[in-house]
Image 1 (tube, helix red, strand yellow):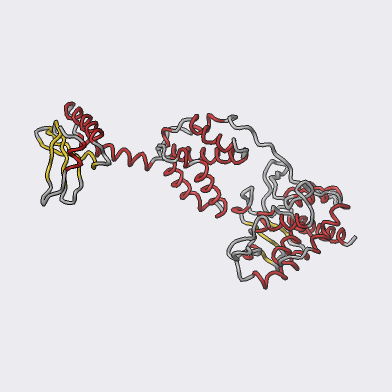
Image 2 (cartoon, rainbow, N blue to C red):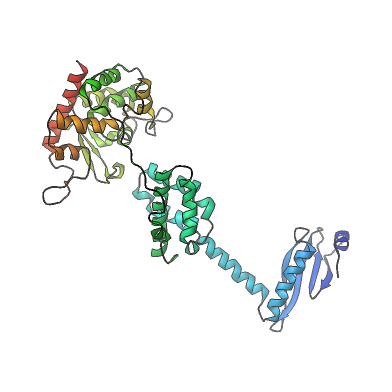
Length: 394
């Protein structure tokens, strides 16, 4: 039987040669000097050889352990070479059906239905919070405790909302796996209530006209880049979500009709939304068009005009004016409009809610379509812009 000292002393020759250990196990010394473990065996009347590793990466002890396993297989009429092929195929199938593989397939299949930003955010969330822990695990083998432990890592850092969103994404992936016969069930269904609920907080908003007037004056007196300045001025007039404003594209805006049609892919409720544009907004857009009209985005980013402005641009401008997060936020202009259009201008709630792109139903329980009450909304948006200008002029 061989010893480590003997193996280390073996030198290459003009031809490769073999040195036996025992029971068919031998080491083959190649002309290059490489030392390869081999096991020669006979099964079903045929002589075969199987590689067991390279010395010294595979030590003498490890080679003998592999040899013992292979000899037992031969004794049980199992061909070690065929067994290895089956294991390789099984590993390949497991890799193809791992959580990561199925998740990436799901993401590729459905991302065309999402906005670019949403698709990127989903993938980043999976790459940072899910793949490192269960990415290589066959999706069919993932049970509720494993997915819960993974999601709790997000919860434990205080990101409760992100934990819920990631759980929801995982559920969609599992259901896709079930539909494509890679899993039998969605384990996230057993985890309802396992993550604390999100504590919702309202965006701070100024709803008192006497406090709103100085804010409007401050906005119009703000000195900054024309793109940021005009976006800052337009937001109170249109009171859309800040994300919708910064991602506005010129192709969506008809200055002659004074309308901005936001496609469903950009809307929270996934329904196309029409924003009537007041004379004030049209004037601001016409002022901006010579600068940004050659690009897709109305409010392009400072670093690249092919991307929308930063989500923090208007927020930073508001903070620079001295308004902290407890006083007013960019999103807060929606609550401002919701309150004052009702209390001061006395417009019907359902008209206001529809312009806010909230889910509003008619007397028969049907959701209003995008053009419902458009004449009233056009009138309201102009009256709102005039009201803000009157406040600012006080």
